[in-house]
Length: 304
Image (cartoon, rainbow, N blue to C red; front, side, top):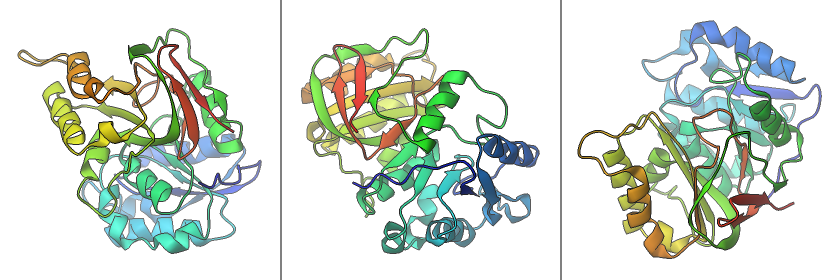
């Protein structure tokens, strides 16, 4: 795996919208928030409201073209996804992954952006960053912890034992120690990769999962799909992040019960309650980097 060169003060970074549109009132504050990081934002067409197509930021060729152009432009040092939402899966067949692999650079985002992380990690051999995004979180002030972890991801230094924000207490569902490459992201997008040319490969890896706005029975169904596909049996360990706005309804199994019944039988270390996902404060994660999970100690260490 190749870790891209870190960003630096004054670096030109592409702002792209691979999925849903940016609310018009957030575009200018998002651009200024990136500029406040010391970077020079370049706004690509998919971010602009005139290109919106329903629940998509722009037609598929426009969104794919922005990513392709941003990677292949040598004056651009990094690609920041301005938001997630829905639609990144639609553009996977439109991208020239071999050309992207020849132009490695920082790529950051999360949620629906998981679809792109998986392919950039697996097909391009590129470490990418699961981070907060300009028009979703840091278009307005967010907590210092999350911004500090974002800066470590973008500017270098996201190694060592990841610190915990105040009040975060990860829960070891299955103690143990495992080392492997970090992979995964949003559970819905991880499941959507199954049976496609871009299916997630968890063999010997540390699988991170999180989600938002899903019913517990839907989460149970997706975990069952991953279990049945052998993804928990294949992986070295499992890291469970935030399950935001996933309230239990009458008749639902508690999420922890689903975790115990569907993940633990694989016999791998499992750490739940890590501060990452659709939650603040949050970690930034270097997907594709090697890490060590010590579930019993509630610790994740990113190796240099």
